[in-house]
Image (cartoon, rainbow, N blue to C red; front, side, top):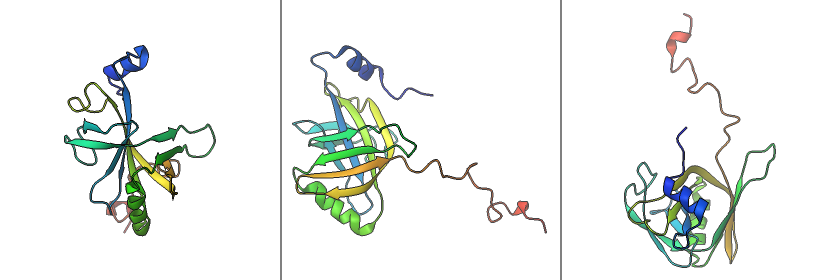
Length: 174
């Protein structure tokens, strides 16, 4: 299996150089939104390059809005792992997007990226976690919270794809 972290971010985690800061970002996408909502956990906006194969704006340079957020890792349990996400609703822009998403009832998709402050615009993210879905979203005057999951892989049919008579008519005796 290919390692998800780049050598540069491994070095930043291991040696913690003073001039290199790891910037956590979230990208939220929904069919009712014209553009994704992007936030960076920092005091200033971040301009960063989006990686190859990204769900939106592939190989484009985009701006992440400076906004405090936290993502709490899941606890060990028998249930599906969930990451609790809390985004400060500083500009109220996020709650407006969430309100429009509630009307359409389609899931909000999330991509988590980690950039280094030294090369975000040139190199792009050094770590990407894709495929998260935001569920049980609540908005207050101060924050937007929700649980991010990878989906219910446990209850999916195996093997995939399903071998049905409609797709494979040769399975049916005549």
